[in-house]
Image (cartoon, rainbow, N blue to C red; front, side, top):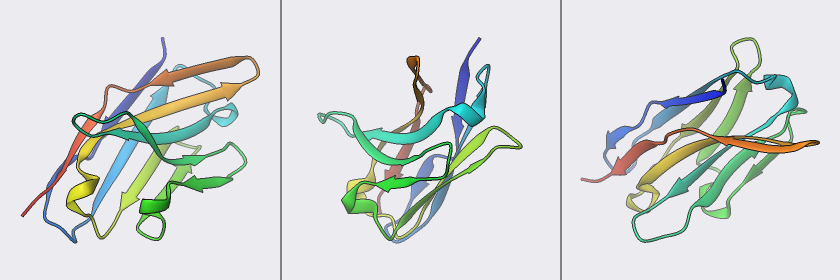
Length: 117
């Protein structure tokens, strides 16, 4: 059974930091690209950052220079370090595992991030 379990969300003041974690089980972690997506109230889910099995990185423009995605293959975990948080970063953050051949994708249950003074 595949599980992606996110943790690390919470309430933080503007300018603060959080680190999200996503522990994966039931998949061959090294063969999956991992990513973080977010969905704010009334908006569509959007990509935040991805990291391929080979370490190729991709970031949404508004988080470049503030967020860092990384993966730990020894622990089957992907991280999202979020610095200089802004109120517009408030959303539910979802972990994603994706493979192209054969195509398949899995989602975590989400973790709430709220940036407010």
